[in-house]
Length: 147
Image (cartoon, rainbow, N blue to C red):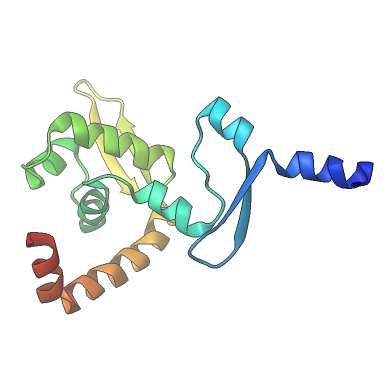
């Protein structure tokens, strides 16, 4: 028969799920709260970076803002495949995640500009490395994507 302390620990552990993030760390999540609040399980850096960069146009937006394309209309013209609504939603997410800032000028005709924050600038080194890897493996990636 189990001791009462062991049953108590086991009953608490039944409410948790554990897994491994790509970094090799074990994480625990309170599943009752996760289902109740419908939150994603984010417990390691890989999960967070995936969540922050999730979106078809986010990396393209970051690259263009870094190049100096900072006005919403310029961004929309530079990515004609994307609708303005989708770009606005992804810009709002990038602002919420602290990667870019929005500067609104108080003028007769309001003017808006986007700029990378310090956090966004630090992320660009990672984006550059991913781009370099993509360029180095371009032929293999084309075959995989087009198959």
